[in-house]
Amino acid sequence: MRHVHAFGDDALGQSDALGVAAAIAAGEISATEAVDAALERIDRVNPQINAIAVDDRERARKRAAADDFGGGVFAGVPSVIKNNTVMAGIPTTHGSAAVAERVATINEPFTDQLLATGLNIVGASTMPAFGLTATTEFVDRDPTRNPWDTDYSSGASSGGSAALVAAGALPIAHGNDGGGSIRIPAAACGLVGLKPSRDRVVASLEGKAMPIDLIANGVISRSVRDTAHFLADAEKYCPADNLPRVGIVEGSSERRLRIALLTEPLTGQLLDDDTQAGLTATAELLESLGHRTEFIPVPVDRAYVTQFTDYWAMMAFSLDRFGKRMIDKGFDRSKLDPFTRGLSRMYLRRMWRTPSVIRGLRQSTARFRATFARFDAVLSPTLAHTTPKIGYLDPAGDFDEIFDRLTRYVAFTPVNNTSGAPGISLPLAQTSQGLPLGMHFTTDLGDERTLLELAYELEAAQPFARINDAG
Image (spheres, rainbow, N blue to C red):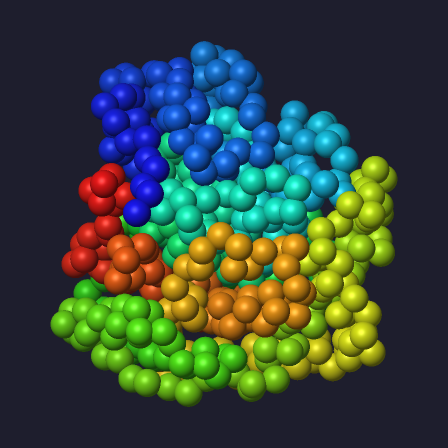
């Protein structure tokens, strides 16, 4: 296996984001030392993993020298912002050559919420074109590679953020999730990835324009506590009006849960041996801790797969036809990648179904949420099979083949996006080759507290594998 990591004896050490923030607050290290260590680590690993889309180090160094990060929980901690989220001073290109490299002059609302946590943004992380696939690969540049083994995908669409955190270059990174785009790369790279409930954090610009808002912003981290404290700090900045407060979650609960066990992908195929073994072991771990698990059938209608993919393709069509209005007047549709164009063509053939698609997705939400009348949480694998090698989901490949592979791979996560329910991927298993395997937990809308309490308990019972222990 070709491991790539930058952990070492510097200002960042082995610490998670809270650990780095505590060291800065105590005067053990400065924000300048933290950012310099992060930049040295990035320079060491990025030639192998290709996870930086925009380098903004000089402004990060100036912010660190000024040491003015407010009262955020991660004050001075170096991080990145995903390159589909607008931040003043950085060009937001959405991973596509079709988008002009025009430097933003203002922040979008969520960016202000992210910065209020005190993170020091050193640049923007890579993502595939418009976040429309589950691997961070391109037709016009090198792919972002998985630091656990650089022959493999880092997942997507927050693949650059996940690769940087897994490699130890940064302790925490921004991601967002419209069909699994925080949870998929977290699973591929052995990290904690929480998609919050719809409206838990400030809505993204793209999500606000959708009939059903699929997108939730969050972070990718190496520890449960980093994710929990991000959510608490974000909530402090802008509480959700229509959801119960989460507050700060700092450990597990004594409550024993009824957990539904979902073993069949929506697409109907069997799990591969490694994924099935990881799921079985996780269920056994839960039982050993006193939780009760029970197998359930797929909690939505089989038509959901086509409904979701039609809706997903609608976004590609909108970009293809209205990119100048949606993204930037310099948008050049002739530079769209083949996969985005293929999705757009597919939607054009199916456009007449749009009203029934939206109606069907809303009906699926009601069916899915009814599961929580009997259960406190649902367990499944994060993905329907192990992380593929680079090229398996090549955006320049035959569209029909790549699309079929994608839908069979991403068969568990999208229902959280259409329903708005939170979901978390935890690195609780590994493949027979030693690559990470994510296990996915879902609770009802607004119940992140139960997810985080359970995640703390599982992290303590079975500490997550670390890349620097693997070689």
